[in-house]
Every structure is written in structure tokens, then in C-alpha cells.
Image (tube, rainbow, N blue to C red):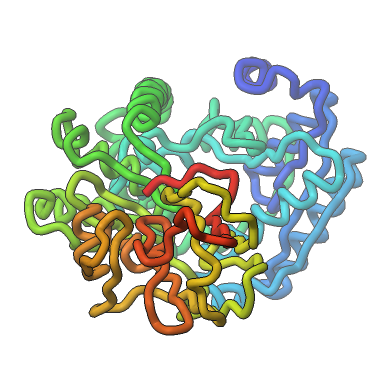
Length: 449
């Protein structure tokens, strides 16, 4: 087993001989065998043990055993005793899930603070097969069918080449002692049911189940890597990032093969479920404005794009009072600057900066969200009024941007600027203007509207 172990780590982590590894050791047979393999090969390592206290004296006995094992191997020993039940309650998750999250977070903390390059867990081929079957039962994409990866970030699984029988045989041949967790023999956990009832049936059909699975897993992992590389390139070509939104062109999505799966590969990173994808695609030819939600994001169906935006945890300002002509302030993540300047002879109007006749302003000004019924005289349309709502429709402003659109209002109630879209004709500079005020939105940046 030593030779197979060395071959495996040389294939997946060739620098392991020169880089220290933090071993996650529970005291069970798998992690104890892994510890002996590291020690027998003279690899640099430390031992980390989590005592969750869920089995009373047995948990404390596990800690004492692992502490002694670390001393025998002359490995540094790290231990933590987190409140897993409290974490499960506060996070509204199962005790098992809370323990996993606490365990890996602590392993990474010890690794980073104590100078270890890797975290090694003692998962073997049986664990990987059980993971695949659990994922299959719960529902999964291609990545969930690849089992456990040999390397995932800073976490390595150096026993994946072996199976439970080989680990047990090595322990027996080398007189290795370990601690038995009695919960492994119960059917309290889904993984144990897979282990006790499903895998034995599969092994009857294929006595070389673990070997076959390892080969299949490698092929699936390679195929999934190629698929992910292809989709990543495709996403980079079609997705458009504009300010705080992500835009997915509907036409390009629908003209591609397997649009359901393609859209899911984009949205899954933002908390959307595959079950939502069909519903989203089914309304793309309907009236724009439908929205779909994940726990963290909202997706808007617009005319030409699916528009993705993070939910805001902070309430937006309803209005802001501007007392004088020289002011700098932030409004909903954007910077506004008002500054007095000579009028000159130029008429300066664009979508991010306007210059207005200072004599026509009556302070204080008000910056607020637009409201139904707001109207103004658009620049270039002297004497003609237009509703702000119609302006937004004409400019094809999507619902997300409508919700953020602001108007700058004069002290007498007239709208000076539909911010970032169009200024009012009545406040423009003329050849007779004596002084001006420049109002800039995110000065120095290009704003797309």
C-alpha cells in the first residue's frame, strides 16, 4: 500500500514531499492509516482533531487517542471543541452539516496560520462512491457524478486510490490501533444507508465495483472539465457586465444548443435552482417585466436581455436635500458633484454631466426617485412637456434601472434633470448666461444608459 500511496501522491501532489500537510484525524481507521503512511514515508505533517463532544466520554477518548498518536509520530497536534449544536441551531442546518462547516473552516484557519500547504482528509474510493450515489439520489449535475476530487483547492485526499477493504488489510498487517465510532453501524445517516444496503447489492453485480468506479470517475471528471472549459469560454463571449448588473442576451441564449443547461450554468452561481430554469425560458416570448428570485439575486426578463442583479440589503434613499451650489455626495452607490464655474459659450449636455444656468436654480434642490406623474421639458424640445414614465419607455430602460432612476428637482418643483438620461430645456446655458453649475454623475467614468 505504501507504493500505491506514493504513486498516487506523486501523480496528484508531486511537491508533497517538500510541503507540510495538516492531517484531519478523527481517530477512525481511515485517518489513522493515513497518519501512519505519512509517518512511514517521512513526510512533514501535523495533526488536527475536532472534538464535537456529541458522544460524551467517547468523544473525549477519541481526542486523547489522537493526541497520543500525534506524540508517537512526533507531529504537532491541534484540537478544537466547537459548539456544534449551537451552530446548527443558529444556522438552521443539521448537526452533521454544521459539524462539516465548522471542521473545514477550522482546518483552513490552522493551515493558514501554522504554515501548512495542504489539508489531507482520509476519504477513499468507497467514500467517493457513496458521495456519488447520495448526489444522484438528491439530484445533481455532471460535477456531482464525479465523486470526490483528489485535489480541491488546498484539500487533498491521498487515500482515494484505495478502498475500505485495503485500508483494513493494511491496518491488520501493521498492528494499527484505531477508535471505532459506533454511529457508523447505525442507519441514522443517509450515507450509512447507502453503505449498508445499496453498495452491497451493486457489489454483487460487479465484484470490482470500487476499481470500476475509480476508472469511471476519472473519465467523468475529465469530461466535466472539458465541458466546464467550453461553457466558461461561451459565457465570457455572451455575458455583458454593466455597472451592478449582468446581462444575458436572450437571442444568443435561445439560438444555442441546450439553452436550459447553459442558462443554469450561469445562474447556479447566484443561488438559482435548475427547477426554475424551465419557468424562466417559458416566458421569454411574453411581456417583459417578469422577475424570478434566488435567496441572493433577482432576474428580470427584459426585451432583449435577462438582467441579473444582487438583492440590496440596505434601503435606498428616498430623497436627498442639496443646500448649495458646491456639493459632493453619494446616491445609491454613485458619486454626484455640483460645482460652480464660468458659463463660457459652450452648451454642455450629455448623459453623465450637465451644465445649467446658475441663475435659474432655486436652492435647496432635491434629488429623489422619480414618481408617476412627474413631467419635464426635455432638452431640445422647447415648450413641450413629457412624462418621465414615457421617457423611460422610449429609452427602453429596464425595470431594475427604472427602480433606481432619480430626478434632480429645482426649489420651485421643476425637474432639472432625469439623472443620467436627459436634462430639462429650461435650465440650459445660453449666450446670455452669466454663471453656470456643472453637475456630474460618477465624473471620469463612462456610464452606460
